[in-house]
Length: 486
Image (cartoon, rainbow, N blue to C red; front, side, top):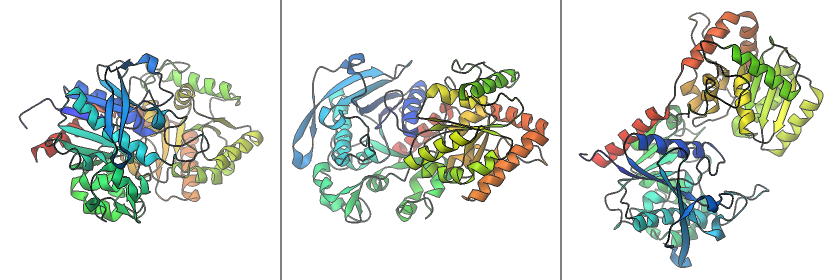
């Protein structure tokens, strides 16, 4: 590759700060900025969901025609702006019938939209049509998760004449969601029925969009090194482990970065008092602030354990529920912020009613998430699987010691406490069992009370860790250049 500056099309179904349901949006909002700063030409494309105010965007003058196979040609509007505080352009595909809804993928009752296949086939094709409209010829098309996983196959079939020299990268943020649909979607994709086979799209007599993307992408990445290996096992493969093993030669793990302009206690305007590793006195002020906010007893010398996340089985919420009362019988305080499965919301609401050392906020609040990260002594993240995870990295930055299950990115980012060598920046357990979680919490609380100097040293080591997007962006560029060289 003699050409140094690459043209990159980055396609995602959600991008911070415009729309978010999970970590994909954080990556899509941060990685393109970091790639742009390395001197490459990158454009981002996402749907213009109903909640994104088009009055704040600029409308392109011409409409966009999108071929939808047996459904005919659809016409969309296109809006544009830049990612906040950057020169990175982002384009929005505006098609009211598909994206003018209350949710991104499901209605307010948690039911997936029945036409999600057509919605995201349309969006994927529209992204490629947009390149033609803009006269932007990408060297790389970078798609993300099942929503845009059909793009690697599209540029080798339907769009091959327009993208003859383009290579594709597919990032898997969460393998659990794969895009299973009725096989008739092939006639909307226009990729040809020869791709309805067990090596490409076919799965249980339907199509699996992510499976097809894994087959046809020139490179597949996951959001941590450990997760790249885990998805090739039965425990974490969600039925695709053998398919992924067959493509192992092109699978790479690149750990997500975090935005330290936003998650850094020395510059964080959302917390009660700023602090850093050289002067951590502000952390105690933040702890008192959390105790006051939640109506907990104001005690400086009790370990405060925080949780911020979805109340979902993946996040280990069942294990937390199983041990919460035993945990609260110890001399601790626990605060939880999140929303999700209704049984969990009801269960923890009941606990908060009966236990004075437990507090709960159902819903999501970015400001409160920052306050919990800053004011807690420890952060609980017992995920059954975790492709990367960001909260444990935020916790390190705030000197809030993570208690994690050693899976995926949690295992890659947290170093287990070793009392003998005085190393580590958190507490890890390996077995996904209630006992393992309970005993690890007991261990962490014991260190807090009986080995305070070691605990403070761990906090300072944690705050020394760095996981910037610049490192991740360089790794992605290396992969782009590698597949272009091929």
